[in-house]
Image 1 (tube, rainbow, N blue to C red):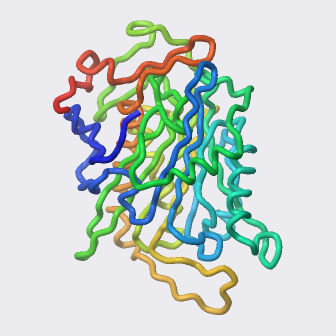
Image 2: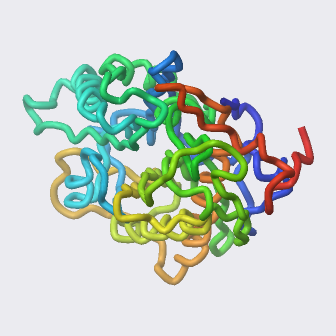
Image 3: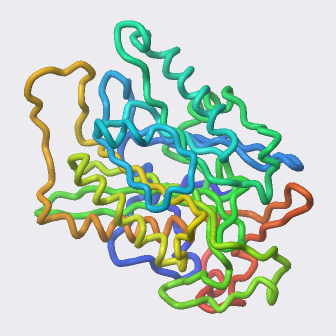
Length: 360
């Protein structure tokens, strides 16, 4: 696990690039002002899992919602809360990430966290739409044991900060990516439109891909599982959750277009997004809030679609970098039944496209 107190420059350390746009000062999703992230990590024997909480903005999200959208790239997943996001185009809770069989416990924890802070829920207002996303970490974690508890959501939210760890932490503790260690990755890009700068940030939970498909900088790495390390045969399945944040004013329709571009960021690393895989993207804008119970006309700002292309590029670059960073930042982990996923860092300088680290 790696601390992001300074700029997240994992690709730069290895002389790699993920595009041409400038990065934010932290190069994480928290470069979008007001966004914070917290983890709770379980790392003990068969328990290799956890919770990651993304807080989209300060203050009451329930009372003052964010414009949001989601897109299911491939729907082999158990995410909760997407239906209302797609119907209303708003986000009213933090976003919690965990493992597949712990979605219920995470949903319970997030709903209780919201109820404790919002007396109107289920009384003078309607209920709440907790958003929980997942990937299957069963190779390293005993998911049947359901180690995650609702209380861990409280803990992760209490730890939320604009400085957070990457790699084998939180929900990413037990995840695999291209048969290496996967986990939590993040990146950001700065887009300038007609003299105004906007930031787009990404956080990715990675758990997908066959080693032989892994691509860096558009070139196959030439890796084969049986040639460099012991790894089980892998079907084309897995998952990737992408969270996109921006301070640019977008409508829900426009944010869905950003979500769709996450596909290109994922496939640039080699994935075919297989039949048994759950790739899902959620995007939100912090530029304006929608008051609960608002009536009549609302005056909302929106970027022109004519200026969409730089943001599409920002999504693709940030998602691509987030996936690779999730692997480079992750430490090697041994978990359930002695299964091991090794850090991609161990193979620096030994595989095509991944030179030795060039800076500390």
